[in-house]
Image (cartoon, rainbow, N blue to C red; front, side, top):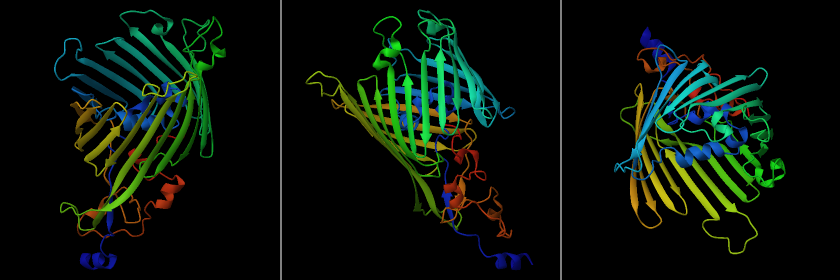
Length: 424
């Protein structure tokens, strides 16, 4: 009878593997409530990840451990050790650790963490409380132990913010110096359809006492155009223009592409016919603008071009090119519990010198699962009954369609394949 039921149901449909991203969501997204939204939008967060992640410094090593106890999902620990490979006495090995607690294991916006380091500041405490129902939040950054305190910022920074899907504004201030140093910074970002515009006040320059806001160098402006939901399964596109400090023009471009290719893997089931790949490309151009003639040299204009290709859940290739150096990176990741990844970077300087950098990461903070879809990118319901022999395929259950992904319905997906959040 079981054979008749199996033959009547037919064989399982052909499958396309959907691997998780190497590091999604990025660690920077966990602390975005401590940052100005202006500093995270306009493609800045993804470009920073593209140009920096898994590119170890020349002749340096880095080791990072991201650990979470099984008994309590609300806490985790990140410890890292980095330094030169040749043990230079003038460049010591640096170690630090970050202990974090967040009220909701699946919502990183309300948390408290303690950061300890072998360099200044020795002990740093950060805390953030965000109320998504109202959109308001408050945060603070306080150096508890510091070798030397020379300015008001060394005693701590506090901030207030508001965030929704279309608007974000906030300010930071120094609680121990509310005079001429108020505010320390302020921002306003709004989104209309695919357009995002923002302005930020960051008083790093002053001409005379009490006139920081009148100095145009203390104001930054940006506008961006973006497509995509923010999920790894959805292609995305970001283009941004920024005018900073009344002297810098920055143009940036980032694109995330989701493609499928045929695969022949004898270790997979017969119904597996393909695999999803992730390809990322980014470009950033910075030009300094001033009235001096003959300033168009490499110091006044610079650029970065980067690309990455994740061939499967285990292999990531990255490369970047700049005016001073170029780099290639190869990373391998095993999805054990905890996961283990190893990266090697080759950096070639403009003068012709080539150096290597190495990195090791152990991570069980970000959980990920190897998902499966049909050739039309139809996500399966989160069960694996079709993998067991002799069990009838349940054709009555409706899987998650590609149209659901395009419309923003990610409820049936693993948390690691959903967008970062619904707030700007």
